[in-house]
Length: 104
Length: 172
Image (cartoon, rainbow over all chains, first blue to last red; front, side, top):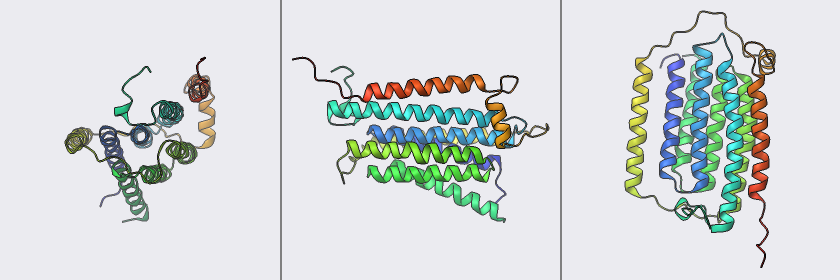
């Protein structure tokens, strides 16, 4: 085992990104799809922090980008859950197969 | 092998294993709990990289906020003890293939590329530097995106309340 550096962190974030993509492609339930998106966004944040630490430590841009990504992800999760609860009220189901009509 | 290395490998195993379990388990509540552990592992990796501020933000926003929101929405929309339906085998196979090919391609690109560390003097991610840059208006200041994000959060909050309001029954 080697001393962990940039490549190890990039490996973790790549693996986490594609775990999220796999979940997004296989899950058919809206809440679990939202969880997969959270995993993808988190892997992007790890990348920003790793590049900030190991490649450009003379700036803090990566840190600020990940703070803004976290803020936007929080807003996105809140709006998505409001939509999901509204959808459950009108369809009694949050499966994407049952939510294919946009108007009702 | 130093203690720091061992801690890094333990944190990465925690993150990846609970991430995989979170997207494969058929009980939706367990998926939320595994997501929680994965997010805690990511916060640990931030602590390991000595970015304490972003680790604290990760714990407060993701572990304390978004996961609780997801668990509440599970309680509101799912029947207790109900398993998610079995997945289509063909769909799982093709999703696995797509994820694995993307993973291999991305990793190949990363390994072939060499990243050169800049030689300029580093800025430490201390609270003082972060605060000065976050609200600074001169070079390296982030006050404009800060204001834009605050407007976006306000709009999202109002939007959530409007969407989730129980609409009155239409006039008879």
